[in-house]
Length: 167
Image 1 (spheres, rainbow, N blue to C red):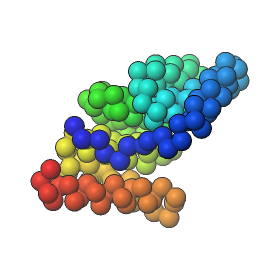
Image 2 (cartoon, one colour; image 1 turned 60 degrees about the horizontal axis):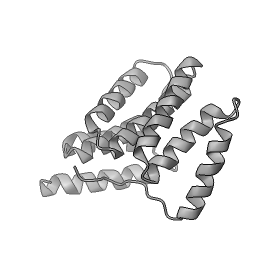
Image 3 (cartoon, rainbow, N blue to C red; image 1 turned 90 degrees about the vertical axis):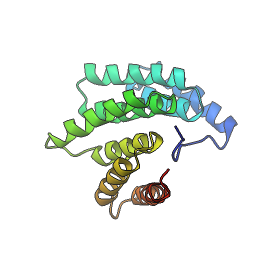
Image 4 (spheres, rainbow, N blue to C red; image 1 turned 180 degrees about the vertical axis):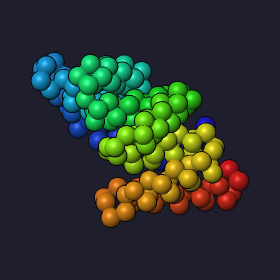
């Protein structure tokens, strides 16, 4: 599997400070849920996939306990991405496909573009270029005129090029 447009830490010292601050925030009950989601993302980006999965599983569990649909969606995407980074592509794909179906069946489209975009990235890393292109086209359509449009456009262009190469 080839990594596809993954996040990386640019300033290790700043990253470490932010991780420490979020660990402290996660101890405060009123900030715990938000801090865990952000901490899990930072740990994933910093290469600590095992801890990221643990932290994000905790964030998703807490989201479900609180019946916070927005956080359930966001933390599902975060956890699936951490699993993807750790090489558990099938598990990540299953989570994201389930989330896409769940959002499609609801009256609230929040996070749909992110779920579709991240599903496309999983497909790309699996070499499923036609599926990836379809996801990135869908995400791009949803993101027209929004700041996230550029990332969908880049992903779509790269996926189309890789598909044309027969990668």
